[in-house]
Length: 550
Image (cartoon, rainbow, N blue to C red; front, side):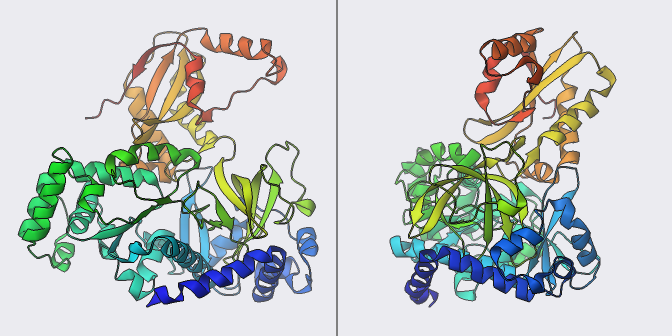
């Protein structure tokens, strides 16, 4: 059994964290040697680089646009672009324009991420061995959403990982992979919960806590139907589940399990709560900090037994940057053996000097930094536009926690919504009213601790605000940002609202800021996108416009 390997996995990781600089240099040598014959490697002289300072001197810091020509060529089938070995998947994430960014993943990169997932599980098993007493409930996105011209799949890394984990772990999942390919999100969630309700769940693991809250809400909403389906061995016809998937589930009646669920619902005040439906739940794995931490305020209601919650770490499409090894807080150990990470002080407004970005041995506890990543999937000194905070040390390796995306970006559910996209959407919708309004900001907020939404603060010079603007803004944002569109369709993002700001409020706010000495008058600038809900309280509003859709 895989779990017998857990102690040796943890010992090896401890050795790596005792020598982070040596681990960094070893990883750099491996990456340079493996990719010296790639187009990028030849251009930047990988074969002649013998040290980390030399790497910093020869290889520039990269934005996506710098790597995009290589990625496009690889997607078109050109060999040896960013890496010598070909990508096996192009994962998608949001960019600053409406188009998605395509992040390559090689077999080596996939295996590196898988090792970190296994390491996280080993640490969790060490502290909570009950996680292997039942099944794992997880939620992922479909692995394949399309194909590049070369035939390489394009899709979600989470789906790829779910489908390709070692068979002993895969056998612990509550749902087969094909359930995640159901297009109708209500049908997908119901099917996931119907299957999970018929099983003993010992671990819930999904990146975003908003997904846990959403599943808990749907479990309660469909209490009677789920219990009936478990008792009868059915899957409700109320939901649009493809017949091929229905037939593959092999459901059987389970009177004993249905009786247990009835008792759980009675104990939960008439609705199924996940903590009562699955009393043997040993742990939950999800993000705990950053802009999503507020979701955890709902967990006590859904999980009255208060199971331990372990953060999944600094985790993005581009990298898995840390591995939490305790349940305390949301900090994780930097994955120094898997990623080469560099840093720039977040409070330093000067442009980062590519030749002197900080390394793992330079960053200080209590300080915050922007992150740059090099990995074996073809990212080289890639600017993540993420801010992390160093919270301590694990052996000699820093512990970090994710704070937020860089300025002008919000990401509650992975949408990575950029300020430029919000501004573009407002300008598109209000194009016929130029000069008659002042867009102040979009504030991302949580509604009842469940679904986030955008609140647009707009000051109109005359009474031209009307409700259809809300729906047009929503549609424009979907065009600007594919991840936002996905989150809206999957019910993880609520519809936006417009708060009509009282005429003259913005000028009064500007004067308050200048008079208090926070801003110089000539340099006054407001972020047009923020997750600081206190900012909205600065303005007196007249009314709120909401969606016209049912």
